[in-house]
Image (cartoon, rainbow, N blue to C red; front, side, top):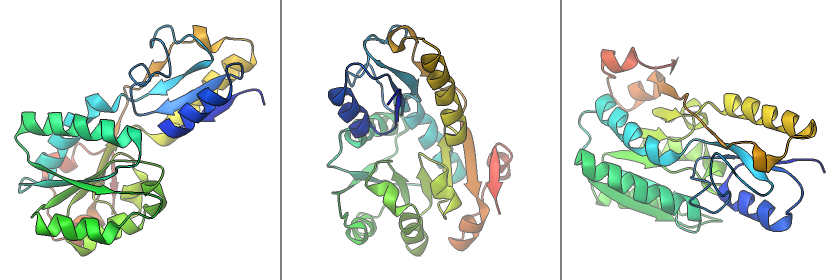
Length: 238
Protein backbone atom coordinates (compact mmCIF):
# COMPACT_ATOMS: atom_id res chain seq x y z
CA UNK A 1 0.00 0.00 0.00
CA UNK A 2 1.42 3.37 -1.08
CA UNK A 3 -1.05 5.92 0.36
CA UNK A 4 -4.10 5.78 2.66
CA UNK A 5 -7.04 8.19 2.18
CA UNK A 6 -9.39 8.41 5.19
CA UNK A 7 -12.34 10.59 6.19
CA UNK A 8 -14.04 10.31 9.59
CA UNK A 9 -11.97 10.93 12.72
CA UNK A 10 -12.12 7.31 14.05
CA UNK A 11 -10.69 6.05 10.75
CA UNK A 12 -8.01 8.75 10.82
CA UNK A 13 -7.01 7.80 14.35
CA UNK A 14 -6.98 4.09 13.49
CA UNK A 15 -4.78 4.72 10.46
CA UNK A 16 -2.44 6.88 12.53
CA UNK A 17 -2.09 4.12 15.13
CA UNK A 18 -1.63 1.44 12.50
CA UNK A 19 1.31 3.00 10.68
CA UNK A 20 3.94 5.70 11.10
CA UNK A 21 5.42 5.15 7.66
CA UNK A 22 2.63 4.81 5.07
CA UNK A 23 1.51 8.32 3.97
CA UNK A 24 -2.05 9.20 5.08
CA UNK A 25 -4.25 11.81 3.40
CA UNK A 26 -7.18 12.86 5.61
CA UNK A 27 -10.37 14.61 4.52
CA UNK A 28 -11.86 15.84 7.78
CA UNK A 29 -14.34 18.33 9.21
CA UNK A 30 -12.62 18.57 12.60
CA UNK A 31 -9.49 20.48 13.55
CA UNK A 32 -6.61 18.05 12.85
CA UNK A 33 -4.33 20.02 15.19
CA UNK A 34 -6.73 20.04 18.15
CA UNK A 35 -7.44 16.33 17.69
CA UNK A 36 -3.73 15.49 17.54
CA UNK A 37 -3.57 14.21 13.98
CA UNK A 38 -0.94 16.75 12.91
CA UNK A 39 1.46 19.16 14.61
CA UNK A 40 0.19 22.22 12.71
CA UNK A 41 -1.64 23.04 9.48
CA UNK A 42 1.46 24.60 7.94
CA UNK A 43 3.86 21.87 9.10
CA UNK A 44 1.94 18.62 9.72
CA UNK A 45 4.96 16.54 10.71
CA UNK A 46 4.77 12.75 10.68
CA UNK A 47 3.02 10.85 7.91
CA UNK A 48 -0.34 12.69 7.79
CA UNK A 49 -1.58 15.62 5.70
CA UNK A 50 -4.75 16.44 3.78
CA UNK A 51 -7.76 18.74 3.93
CA UNK A 52 -9.96 20.15 6.69
CA UNK A 53 -13.20 22.14 6.60
CA UNK A 54 -12.72 23.27 10.24
CA UNK A 55 -16.40 22.75 11.16
CA UNK A 56 -16.09 25.19 14.08
CA UNK A 57 -16.15 28.06 11.62
CA UNK A 58 -19.17 26.57 9.82
CA UNK A 59 -21.43 25.97 12.82
CA UNK A 60 -22.43 29.61 13.20
CA UNK A 61 -22.84 30.13 9.45
CA UNK A 62 -25.02 27.02 9.20
CA UNK A 63 -27.25 28.21 12.05
CA UNK A 64 -27.50 31.72 10.56
CA UNK A 65 -28.60 30.31 7.20
CA UNK A 66 -31.07 28.00 8.93
CA UNK A 67 -32.65 30.92 10.78
CA UNK A 68 -32.84 32.98 7.60
CA UNK A 69 -34.40 30.09 5.71
CA UNK A 70 -36.86 29.22 8.49
CA UNK A 71 -37.50 32.47 10.44
CA UNK A 72 -40.02 30.69 12.73
CA UNK A 73 -37.28 28.56 14.33
CA UNK A 74 -37.54 28.79 18.11
CA UNK A 75 -35.76 25.62 19.28
CA UNK A 76 -33.39 23.39 17.32
CA UNK A 77 -32.91 19.69 18.03
CA UNK A 78 -29.36 18.44 17.39
CA UNK A 79 -29.16 14.79 16.36
CA UNK A 80 -25.75 13.29 17.11
CA UNK A 81 -23.98 10.03 17.93
CA UNK A 82 -22.80 10.27 21.55
CA UNK A 83 -20.47 7.27 21.11
CA UNK A 84 -18.19 9.17 18.72
CA UNK A 85 -15.59 11.83 19.54
CA UNK A 86 -15.99 14.19 16.59
CA UNK A 87 -19.77 14.77 17.02
CA UNK A 88 -19.19 15.68 20.68
CA UNK A 89 -16.73 18.34 19.53
CA UNK A 90 -19.21 19.58 16.93
CA UNK A 91 -22.04 19.76 19.47
CA UNK A 92 -20.00 22.14 21.63
CA UNK A 93 -19.31 24.29 18.57
CA UNK A 94 -23.03 24.46 17.75
CA UNK A 95 -23.83 25.32 21.36
CA UNK A 96 -21.39 28.24 21.30
CA UNK A 97 -22.77 29.50 17.98
CA UNK A 98 -26.38 29.09 19.17
CA UNK A 99 -25.72 31.14 22.31
CA UNK A 100 -24.37 33.96 20.19
CA UNK A 101 -27.49 33.81 17.97
CA UNK A 102 -29.87 33.33 20.92
CA UNK A 103 -31.23 30.07 19.49
CA UNK A 104 -32.03 27.38 22.11
CA UNK A 105 -30.71 23.90 21.28
CA UNK A 106 -31.97 20.49 22.40
CA UNK A 107 -29.48 17.61 22.42
CA UNK A 108 -30.90 14.52 20.70
CA UNK A 109 -28.17 12.02 21.51
CA UNK A 110 -28.30 8.53 20.02
CA UNK A 111 -25.84 5.67 20.31
CA UNK A 112 -24.49 3.40 17.61
CA UNK A 113 -24.42 0.85 16.20
CA UNK A 114 -28.26 0.83 16.29
CA UNK A 115 -29.35 4.39 17.08
CA UNK A 116 -32.89 4.91 18.40
CA UNK A 117 -33.93 7.42 15.77
CA UNK A 118 -37.65 7.13 16.50
CA UNK A 119 -36.93 7.86 20.17
CA UNK A 120 -34.84 10.90 19.21
CA UNK A 121 -37.66 12.37 17.12
CA UNK A 122 -40.16 11.67 19.91
CA UNK A 123 -37.85 13.54 22.30
CA UNK A 124 -37.70 16.44 19.83
CA UNK A 125 -41.50 16.61 19.77
CA UNK A 126 -41.72 16.46 23.56
CA UNK A 127 -39.09 19.20 23.84
CA UNK A 128 -40.99 21.31 21.29
CA UNK A 129 -38.06 21.54 18.90
CA UNK A 130 -39.34 22.90 15.60
CA UNK A 131 -36.19 22.35 13.53
CA UNK A 132 -33.38 19.77 13.29
CA UNK A 133 -29.63 19.78 12.73
CA UNK A 134 -27.83 16.48 12.18
CA UNK A 135 -24.14 16.14 13.00
CA UNK A 136 -22.43 13.78 10.58
CA UNK A 137 -20.88 10.56 11.83
CA UNK A 138 -20.11 7.08 10.46
CA UNK A 139 -23.10 5.57 12.28
CA UNK A 140 -25.66 8.15 11.17
CA UNK A 141 -24.36 8.16 7.60
CA UNK A 142 -26.02 4.76 7.21
CA UNK A 143 -29.39 6.47 7.66
CA UNK A 144 -29.05 9.12 4.94
CA UNK A 145 -32.60 8.41 3.72
CA UNK A 146 -34.37 7.47 6.94
CA UNK A 147 -33.38 10.58 8.91
CA UNK A 148 -34.71 13.06 6.31
CA UNK A 149 -37.84 10.88 5.98
CA UNK A 150 -38.42 11.11 9.74
CA UNK A 151 -37.87 14.86 9.63
CA UNK A 152 -40.50 15.21 6.90
CA UNK A 153 -42.89 12.90 8.77
CA UNK A 154 -42.53 15.14 11.84
CA UNK A 155 -42.72 18.30 9.70
CA UNK A 156 -39.31 19.43 10.93
CA UNK A 157 -37.15 21.64 8.71
CA UNK A 158 -33.72 19.98 8.72
CA UNK A 159 -30.20 21.07 7.89
CA UNK A 160 -27.13 18.89 7.35
CA UNK A 161 -23.36 18.94 7.12
CA UNK A 162 -23.31 17.08 3.80
CA UNK A 163 -25.40 17.63 0.67
CA UNK A 164 -26.17 13.90 0.26
CA UNK A 165 -28.85 14.27 2.94
CA UNK A 166 -30.58 17.00 0.95
CA UNK A 167 -30.53 14.79 -2.12
CA UNK A 168 -32.39 12.12 -0.12
CA UNK A 169 -35.00 14.51 1.32
CA UNK A 170 -33.35 16.86 3.82
CA UNK A 171 -34.34 20.52 3.55
CA UNK A 172 -30.91 22.15 3.27
CA UNK A 173 -27.16 21.87 3.76
CA UNK A 174 -24.19 24.18 3.89
CA UNK A 175 -21.03 22.19 3.39
CA UNK A 176 -17.93 21.55 1.36
CA UNK A 177 -18.62 19.82 -1.94
CA UNK A 178 -17.62 16.18 -1.47
CA UNK A 179 -16.53 15.74 -5.10
CA UNK A 180 -14.30 18.82 -4.86
CA UNK A 181 -12.82 17.55 -1.61
CA UNK A 182 -11.83 14.22 -3.09
CA UNK A 183 -10.44 15.84 -6.22
CA UNK A 184 -8.21 17.93 -3.94
CA UNK A 185 -7.26 14.81 -1.98
CA UNK A 186 -6.26 13.18 -5.27
CA UNK A 187 -3.81 16.05 -5.83
CA UNK A 188 -2.17 15.22 -2.49
CA UNK A 189 -2.00 11.54 -3.39
CA UNK A 190 -0.39 12.42 -6.72
CA UNK A 191 2.24 14.62 -5.05
CA UNK A 192 3.07 11.91 -2.50
CA UNK A 193 3.37 9.23 -5.18
CA UNK A 194 5.80 11.55 -6.97
CA UNK A 195 7.98 11.76 -3.88
CA UNK A 196 6.60 14.55 -1.69
CA UNK A 197 6.62 13.92 2.06
CA UNK A 198 3.34 14.36 3.99
CA UNK A 199 5.21 16.18 6.77
CA UNK A 200 6.13 18.89 4.28
CA UNK A 201 2.69 19.28 2.61
CA UNK A 202 0.57 21.87 4.47
CA UNK A 203 -2.95 20.81 5.45
CA UNK A 204 -5.33 22.69 3.18
CA UNK A 205 -8.25 24.50 4.77
CA UNK A 206 -11.35 24.37 2.58
CA UNK A 207 -12.77 27.80 1.78
CA UNK A 208 -15.39 26.88 -0.83
CA UNK A 209 -18.79 25.77 0.45
CA UNK A 210 -22.06 24.87 -1.21
CA UNK A 211 -25.55 25.94 -0.07
CA UNK A 212 -28.16 23.40 -1.23
CA UNK A 213 -31.95 23.62 -0.78
CA UNK A 214 -34.58 20.97 -1.51
CA UNK A 215 -37.76 22.76 -2.63
CA UNK A 216 -39.71 19.51 -2.88
CA UNK A 217 -39.09 18.91 0.82
CA UNK A 218 -40.04 22.51 1.67
CA UNK A 219 -43.37 21.96 -0.05
CA UNK A 220 -43.93 18.66 1.79
CA UNK A 221 -43.55 20.31 5.19
CA UNK A 222 -45.50 23.42 4.23
CA UNK A 223 -42.53 25.80 4.22
CA UNK A 224 -42.00 28.74 1.89
CA UNK A 225 -38.33 29.56 1.33
CA UNK A 226 -37.71 33.35 1.38
CA UNK A 227 -36.81 34.52 -2.17
CA UNK A 228 -33.63 36.27 -0.99
CA UNK A 229 -32.40 33.01 0.56
CA UNK A 230 -33.34 30.93 -2.48
CA UNK A 231 -31.40 33.33 -4.71
CA UNK A 232 -28.23 32.61 -2.71
CA UNK A 233 -28.46 28.82 -3.06
CA UNK A 234 -25.71 27.22 -5.13
CA UNK A 235 -28.02 24.33 -5.99
CA UNK A 236 -31.79 23.89 -5.78
CA UNK A 237 -33.43 20.47 -5.87
CA UNK A 238 -36.95 20.69 -7.29
